[in-house]
Image (tube, rainbow, N blue to C red; front, side):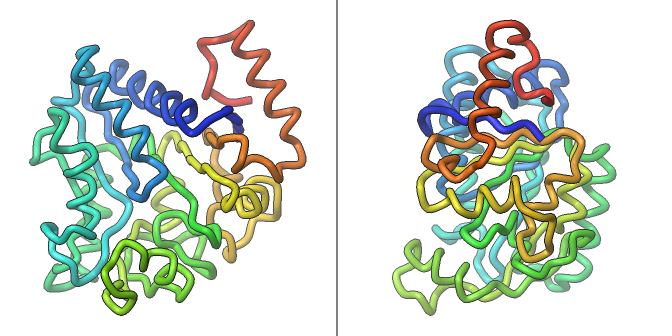
Length: 266
C-alpha cells in the first residue's frame, strides 16, 4: 500500500486524475471503477479539464460504478447515476453504452447483481477502481460486518450512513434504507485501487483502515491485502497516521529520483 499525503484536496484530486489519465492513455479501452460522494468530485473535474483542454479521450473507456440506492430512478437528483451524469458522464466522451451503474429499480435485485458481476468479468475486469471511505470505514456500501469476500449484492444501510447522507435529501426519512453495492471481494479484484480521503473528520478512520488490523468492521482495511493500492489523503485526513513522516519521505524520494513511479507501490 502506498500512502501519499498531499497538502490540499486540490493536490490529491489532480494526482488521482493524473493516475487515471495515464491508465487511459496506456490502454484506451480501460475499465474504470468509479465512486460517488463529495470526495471524487475534484478528480472528475480535473479529468473533464484534461478531456476538454488536453484531448484526453474516453471514447473506448468502459465504466462500472460501485453502488446505487434501491428505489431511486436514475433521474432522481440524489441517485448515483444522476450524480455521475452531472459530475462526469455529461462532460466527456464515454459512450453511453459503455456506462454501467447499478439499477435500483431492477425487477429482481438478485438476478441483476449476478448480471453485474458477469458484466465486469466479461469486460476483462476493472483496471483502476476509485474509492472513497465512509465515516465508519466502509468502501462502497460495504457496511461494518460485511464479508471481506462479498460480491455485488443488496445491502441494508446502517443508521450512521443514513444520517450521514440525510444532508443531501429534503427530509431524513427520504434516504433509502437499501442499496446495491459491489462487494469487498469484487473491489479487491481490481488490478489497481485508488482510495481518496480528505478533511479532519476522516482522520481517525483513515488511520484505522491503513494502520489498524484488517477487520470486517472496517471494510476499507481489506485494502491492506491488495497488491497495488494507492491511498491519497490531504494533511487533515492524514493527521492521525503514525507513519506519516515515512509516507511523506517515500513520496519526496520518488518525486526527486523516480518520478515515473509515483503511485506504483512503495
